[in-house]
Length: 213
Ligand SMILES: [Cu+2]
Image (spheres, rainbow, N blue to C red):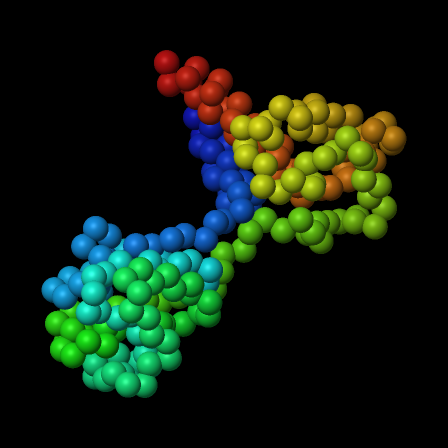
């Protein structure tokens, strides 16, 4: 019974973290330490990664190579000469700006056939926590209290967020007091999310050790 509560709280923590934490664009080094070179297997390299719009690909390579973005057709046939973009600086950073599959090859003769070809499937950008309140039951009458500073700081980390918002959980049951209820019910979604965070953290650090001992 108690353990199922803990599990439920952890689930809520996980959901809350996904809602609250802004997702940062990732930077991928193509081929890791091997870099952009002949003989590497870039389909394997890309296979366990999920790329999103805003992520970056960093190609590191020596002289004699290029990074060309090409069409699917040219990628499959290793055709050079129609490249959408090209760079031979030795360190090329490509920002993935649009969803869909992006194709990269090296334009040096025979290098594409030799393995220097990369296709990455790019998904739409992950949604960061939005500061706009979600459609709450009664958003119009909500008078925002100045004490609830949580709304304006969507990128607050869970550790720093716990201290100032503890009041939201403690004041919640006192709905009968109209003036208090107004301030505590204000930014409803964010308060809820942070309340979930707090409860989850308490369960993690206090309840879980008690249950497992
Ligand atoms: Cu090359």
